[in-house]
Amino acid sequence: MFIGREKELRQLNAELSSWKRRTAVLVYGKRRVGKSTLLSEAAKSFEGVVINHMCVTSTFEGNMELIYQSVSEGLGLPNIRFGSLFEMMDYLKTLDKKILLIIDEYPYLKQTKKKNEVDSYMQAVIDKLPENVKLVLCGSYITVMKELLEEGNPLFGRFSLIQHIRDFDYLDAAKFYPDLSVRDKVAFYAAFGGSPYVLENLDTSLPLRENIERLLLPETGLVRSHIENVMLREIQKSFDARILEILGNGKKRYSEIRDKIANSETGLLDKQLKILLDMETIQKTEPINRRNDKKKQFYEIVDNLMRFYFTFIFGKAGTIARIGEEQFYNRNIDAVLEQFVSRRLEGIALQYFHRAAILGKYPDIDDFGSYWYDDPATKTNGEFDCVIRRGEQYDFYECKYFDRPMTLEECRQEKEQLDSIKGITVSGVGFVCTGGFDFEGAEGFTLIDGKTLYFNE
Image (cartoon, rainbow, N blue to C red; front, side, top):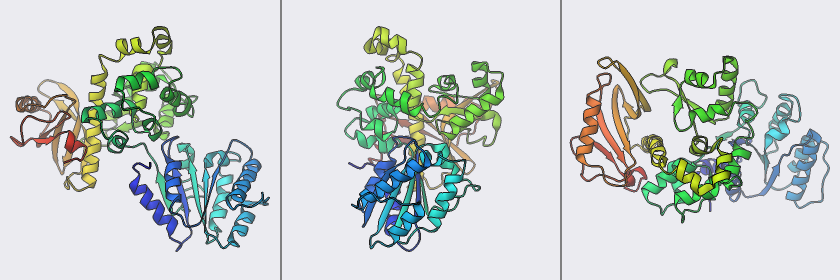
């Protein structure tokens, strides 16, 4: 069953069904994020011959031979040996058929020659693309695929549609476990993230704990293997894994990372952070009231699954093997899991505001994220993680991962704490609570319960 990606699917279908112009599409995103599934779904509506080809680790000539073979098989013909892609396209032009050619894992082909040599070759192919052929280039090595979008690259400006496929957010991820309670939906997303590959391998008839013990803790666990052998393999030779261990479930300044690693070579750390940023493994964040203030920039892990792995599992393989998954969970995860999930609820709330803003539910939102304050009275500073900006006004939201309704008195106490801080100006106060509230709108508080959070109002 195809889940999510409604916007991307509409865009692809529109591009692949229109024959008014030459079509070359670029689709990229990290491994097992659902690119091939999306293309397969779009191909179902294509009125013509669909040819899927997967590039491999080989020579340029070897990859060309395999492309010719895929095209021959897709057309139901004996293996045709073409002299070049140009010759192949000339042949396809003679056919009374509409053809969709999908070349997957393009980076394997690109890396068979010097830097932009293959890209230049492909540029010429696209510029002479027959009117009855549509071409899709797809790839998982994000840094390599992003090179195609740079102004100096031969393929710059050659794509009629570019799609960057990312993990599902909390709302689309919940479509894999629609019958769970709001609290459990939040917990599963906090631990396992939004990778379609991971989500489809969950057994949500079992508690979160059993999924963690089955998929994440064993050395051969499906999801742990996915992290160690797929997600980290592309970059593990280029960075110090301790960077991700230091970030864990939080966020750190550059100086904090540098000091913990005790690395005097800041140039090397800069390079490693850039690799992780380019690979979209980490992201750089800053408070919405301190945009472009480098002193207030933080680094954090993007994917919840990676957060969980580096918070609880990384570097502890020996301990897990010695005492077993059940005892490891009891001693290292059980008591602090709720705190871990609570931190992720703040991220879910920001995703909610993003969705709600797009839908027009908050038409005056200009920005959302964290808010930095300096309290001159107490000479302290800190950060609120869930704040929205409307013009010059800031609304502060407290997120509570409760298994019970939040009371009016608790909301009042939270507001009093906000009012006591002299370094902030509070325009509005709201609450996000998975357990809901034991009162209806009062005292101007904006209340977001589980049903609202998951757009089930």
